[in-house]
Length: 115
Length: 106
Image 1 (cartoon, rainbow over the protein chains, first blue to last red):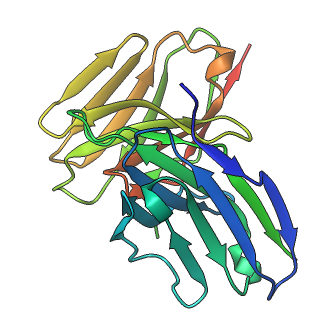
Image 2: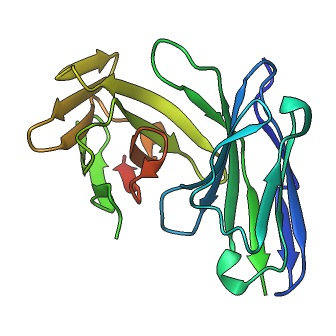
C-alpha cells in the first residue's frame, strides 16, 4: 500500500513570495489533515478535510493561508504572502476512521524555509 | 504554552527500559496517542489508548493512563538503538506535545 505522498520535499523562498504544497493521501482515506511543525515543537493542526469539505480550520491563518481538496482526493496548501515565521515543516496526513479512532498516516513533510 | 506537556530529553542505555511521560489538559479526550518521529520523516503512530482504559500493552510498549491526574506514560522495554527518535503524545488528533527526544546509548 502506497503511503501519503507530499511534494516538494524542500522549498526555499523569500518573504512576501507565494508557495504551494501538494499532498496525495492514501487511496480511499476520506479524511485529510495539514499540520505545521515548527522546529522544536509538536505538529499544529491547520486544517482537516472530510472528503472535500472542511471539518476544522480554526487554527488556519486565513489572511495568508488557504487550502483546498478538489474531488475529495489530492489537496494543496498555499501561503501568500509568506512571512519569516512560516518557516516550518508542513505535514500532510490521512485517515480512514475506524473502531480505534482516527489512525493517521503521515507523509514525509515539506520543509519550508522563508528568507 | 502547550496544552500537552512532555519532558524534552531522555537518555538511556541499550537494554534498559525507557519511560516517557506526558500530561494533558482535556479530560474529555476520547483517545490518547503516542507517535514516533525519526529524522527527516513524518510521524508514525506507535500506539493509542482509549480513555476508559488504564493500561495497554503491545509487545515492548506499555501505555499507562491516569485520568485523575491527566497523566500518560509510554514505557519501552529492552530499548534498542533503533528506538532513538522523538516521541510525541497527543490528545485526540489536534493537540500534540513538543516531543521527547530519546537517545539510546550502546
